[in-house]
Structures are given as C-alpha cells and as structure tokens.
Length: 67
Image (cartoon, rainbow, N blue to C red; front, side):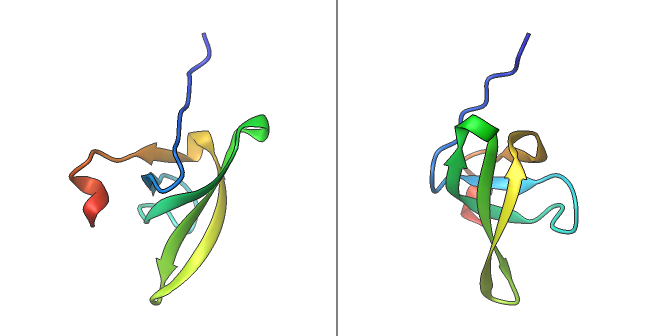
C-alpha cells in the first residue's frame, strides 16, 4: 500500500534528514510528479530554499507551525 502525501503551499513542515534536520520551514513549491517539495528555511535570518522528497519532511501540528 502506498502512503498518500498531501502538502499545501505555505504549510509548515519539519525536515527529518540531512544538514537541515530538525529545521522548520514552509512549503514554497510542490512537484507531485517527482514527489518532491521546495521548503524555505531561515539560515542566519535569510530564506534558503531546500529541495526534499515527501519522505524527508513531516507535517507539523497547527500549534507547532507558529514557531
């Protein structure tokens, strides 16, 4: 059974892998055909786009996204 991933532009997510592990960012682009997203995170107060697969991020609860 395949897991169904649904993300929305502007949604807050936590990165689960790599150098940006534990960073919280916002979804800025969704590429459903390749199951990837672009998530924008703040690094030294500057926005940094990071390309990730759907499996490399987790959705946050409504209270967590406000950070």
